[in-house]
Each structure stands twice: as C-alpha cells, then as structure tokens.
Length: 301
Image 1 (tube, helix red, strand yellow):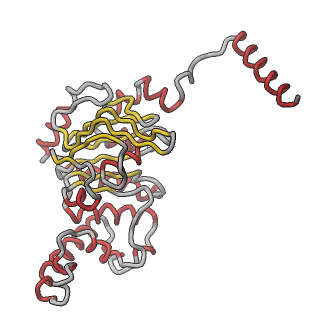
Image 2 (cartoon, helix red, strand yellow):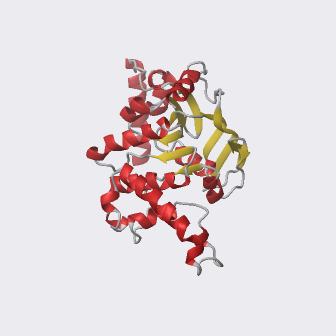
Image 3 (spheres, rainbow, N blue to C red):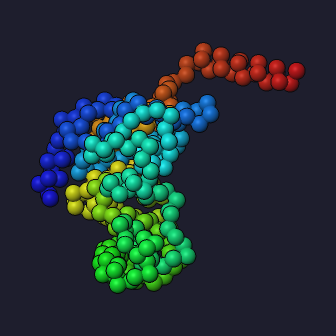
C-alpha cells in the first residue's frame, strides 16, 4: 500500500496547477456544475477532478461554495446544470443513499449523530444491505442474526480504532463535539468506502483531539482510500494534504501542492481581496476622503 501511495503522490508532481487541471487517475470528474440561490450563483465549477488515493483539501473563504459543492456531488442537493461521475458512474439525479452505497460517503460540519441512540447503535446503522431491515425478514431473527453479529464485530473494531470503545453503550448525545466527529468518521467506514469527504473535520474540536483526528485522516489515505476535505485550518491543510483546490465566489481559482498554493497570488487575492497590497497615494487618499465627505453631506441634506 505504501508503494501505491507513493505512486499516487508522485503522479501529482506532473499535474498542472491551473484551475480544473486534469489528473492521471481521477476518482471524481465533474464539468459545468452550477447552483444558484435566487440571484446568487453559489457554485460555478467549469471542471474539477479529484485524484485517487491521496488527500485533497478544498479551501476558500467563507461563502466560496465549498459545502454546496459537497452537497451537489453527494446527492444532498440538486444542481441547476452540470454532470459528474464517481469511478466512471454518472451521479446526476442519484439519491444520497445510493451514492453512499457506491462507496462515496461524507461527514458534515454539524455532526449528524443520532443523539438518542447509543454509540454502538449508531455504528450498526451505518452498515448497508442489512437483512434485518427488510419488513418480511425482520420477524425471523435466525435469518439475519449471523449478519448482525458480523456487523457488530466490525463496529467494535472501528470503535476501538477511534478510541470510542469505552463509550460503546453511552448515548451519542452525551459525546463531546470532537467525539461526535470521531463517531461520524467511524460510522462512515462501516460501508468500506473508497472516497471519504469530510466537511470541516476540525470545526469545534478541542486541541486535545485535533492531533488524533489528523492521524485518523492520514490513516484513511494510508489504507488506500481517497480523502477530500473542507478545512479553514491552514496548518492542517499544509500538514496532511497532498493536493489543494481553492474556491472563491463559487469558482475554482487555483490548484496545486500545499506549498505552491499558499504562495499563489490568486489564493492570496481570494482570501484578502485583489487589491489588499496596493498602497494608496496621497492624491488617492485625498480623493477618497473628498468622496466620503460628499456622501456624508448628501445624507445630512
């Protein structure tokens, strides 16, 4: 697996840093994806590709359209236009639960644990294809008991991995914010996904758990999975991501390695404004002051 990871990371070295750059082995490909809310175009992505087997960070200022793009790709929202695929399977108009069954799962910025169920019950619900969920099989426990035991065993292994085994019988609603993030990530693995999409995994997590979460995200890649995550913590982005995609005003404005992206003027402009480093001359300042004074006088009149 280490050799495959190294190959996937090395392949990115040959990728252009232009927005929407083509990847050597993309797991997700999308084109012409748009989503408007009234007069606001929240997403306007001409082309996007996510490389298989690496960690890709999706960054951008607040309101850039990152979470909306997540919602579109995973079937939680409908676009106005566009097409995209996962492993060559077209996903337009595919329901979110069917997208998950294909191996593309996501977590949420605000965790979606079922607070009144125990931790182990939350984990069991994450498994798909359960015979006991079928109406005509539910009364006959002997037909699905073996499968449920296997699911429970897998859930216990994941809880131990994420250090939540001590909370097994606790209600999910009693967990801290960081523990809920861990539970949601562990539950996502119950379907053995190829692609895991994490929406701000560090949001609301105390510093004591951040390092643990970082390690878990890296371990997903080390297992051969693909990770796409939205994050505002630039230290995390620099530390664990192999590739970075930058959004601003609904569009992809830059791509590249963490080091190249952080130094990209397009990224600096996206976060700080296109003219953040332009000095005003004395004449400019005088003209600006005169304009403000004129507006004040007009309002007073």
